Image 1 (tube, rainbow, N blue to C red):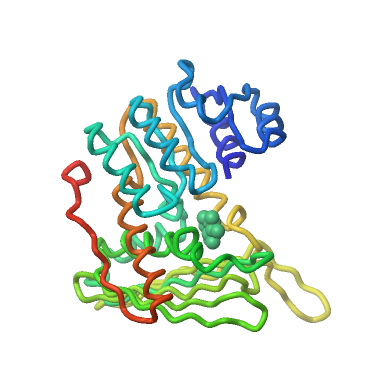
Image 2: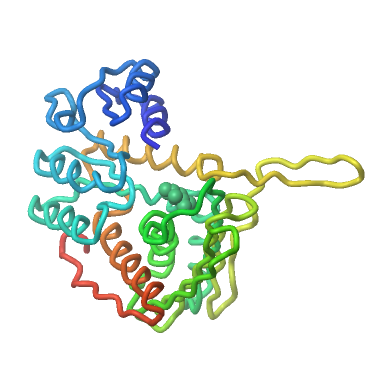
Length: 311
Ligand code: ISE
């Protein structure tokens, strides 16, 4: 993910990728060569005086540590989701940014920039109150993901989509899990939102393609993304669509646009996009959903009041 972002950053005017770090040294070397940067060890890179802004796309459990360092130094930050490996780590990032007193972090919930999601959101303006949001999220994974990673790594995106489209918070979640014979898991999450509407997520860890869709029902009608094919081919009297197998293809535009927006905001020194509060709130829901799945019961979402910084 870091390599992908670094290439998108390279395309921005006035931005230079100065230094890169990766726990896999050969990956750091390859990326440094490709973007004409130097390699620095991870613990110190954030402190380098010629590093003005930081993009963190390391493994999830390291996000909070690097993020809090950058925030304490007042360096604008692009932070991949989840903002911490655990809810406590995520809270640490939130607390540090609140303490710093200014929003300097953009969180990588890229679907906000995906043109199909933007169109859905724009159409909703004319449809009146929302009653239901249904997300479909299929992955193509080579091996089953550990159950405790499904929500924090994956459904956290759908949770954010539901919060972003409705402007509501979750107050309770219920989860049903299907253990498939091939070891993969399908999940159905039902979220109750503060205004009485419903957020549903249908998740597959091993689907027929990588697919993300959203469908919103409102009092005045409904709006949905169309299936997202990459190409269509015709042969033997039949037509077939290629959907793709990973998020890089599906969200190519969104990744490019979020980096473009971040770079523009950096020049103006202004915050933009999904916030640390969004990252924290979604993670609290993901954590409650994980418990709901393991404990097989509805779990209340214990979200503190939103700090005034994010009003
Ligand atoms: C991955 O980390 C992502 O962020 C993708 O958007 C998501 O669909 C996938 O499930 C995650 O593993």
